[in-house]
Length: 426
Image (cartoon, rainbow, N blue to C red; front, top):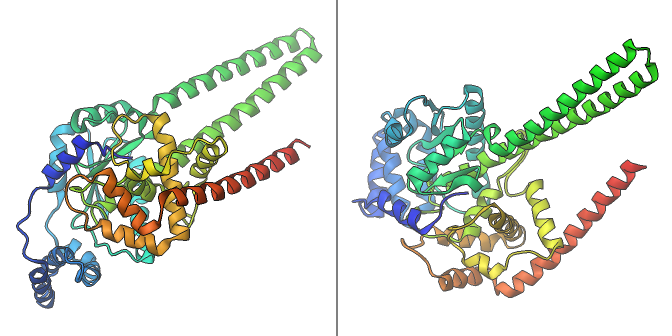
């Protein structure tokens, strides 16, 4: 998720600035010469400029990617990318440098390093899946910037003060203006604290039952003592299961969040999207949501569903609450969204992107490739709709088709879940 509001869009355009680049053809020539002479970092940068020409795009990207590792190693210190954050963040932030990222974090060291590992895995899978799709992208020019907050309140304050973004309904976001992702340690969210306080109350009840059982045993009331111990044991078993469920949910959500935001950061730094242009929400969020996963130790990406998103989509379909497809394909501004209004839109974006990847893959690839040359500035709703229908056909026809298929799939999964539940109760 990210602040794709009109204000942040123009802030990004201003921050991006104007470049005095050579023509792409001249840049390509310069790159070839620099590469032949062993000036790898210079060649790498020239190839990225040559990428602007659609005719040179594939070859420039291929050559740049072949030089990426050596160019990174031979480049000058790139910590200048995080200098704008230092004064804003204050003391307590440690700098981490991985192969592809620069991270500022005041969260715990083990949590930070685990998230950096997720970022690198997201990058690997992103390039793999986009390559398979056949959409040309280039390596990012420098390490990408991320800011990790150890406390939820600090995350909210930074988003409001420095991005003008009410992040209360998000767990992380991509900042267009800063060209960085901002996330926080999920374990510090107020909602989790409330749940843990409720569980602590159950612990007190277990202690009370245990004390009562001990007293009953001392008084010779052995049957009552046994009943009290059984009640305490049952309550403790339920408490353990609930704690495990919550911990698993927090872990699963935290992993998915990092992968999601990493894809936003990568898309805007590899030529797939441009911070000066305006994109439909379904493209940005559908793409990012397609890489969500519970873990990166198993397969994830375009070809693999993320169960929580699938469940959200099923609920919307079964309740006949799917957002209008026509409204979704022209929406490019998340101003005013809150959790309850964003959830169905993001679930629909996830479903639409996966549907198009499954049934109209070539058209999706052509659509994404065209977006790489989108002009700077805002797009009208009519322009978004025309471009969508030119690649995917009449939006009303597509909507009827996917609703029928999604409804059938949702009913099948619902019936299977009910059978499992019934079997467990026997």
